[in-house]
Image (cartoon, rainbow, N blue to C red):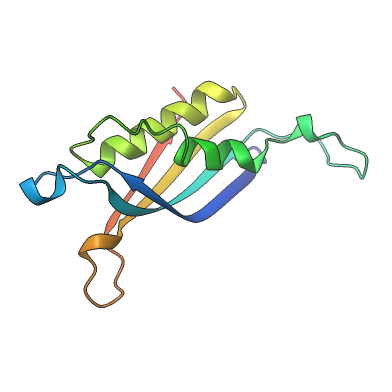
Length: 123
């Protein structure tokens, strides 16, 4: 099995137009989004290895925040996760796998986490 690097950005709170029920479809909902991306990596990271040998964490954050269109309604949060995966795969050919965890904050009643985890591999 080849070595890999996992970049992680966790617990981003993002307002997204999503939902199935009428009370959900007209206003953005708060989602907690976490992203893990598996990357191919160089043979070794030496002290002077340039940033280009890895990937910026800000790329993952951008995919889960700014890249989600504000004027598009996603019926399912699974579609939000797909959009984030697509954005990350397009941005860097070294990304082999992306895992997106989304928690719907508005439906929690006792601090439980209700949501999905979607995992996609580069095809």
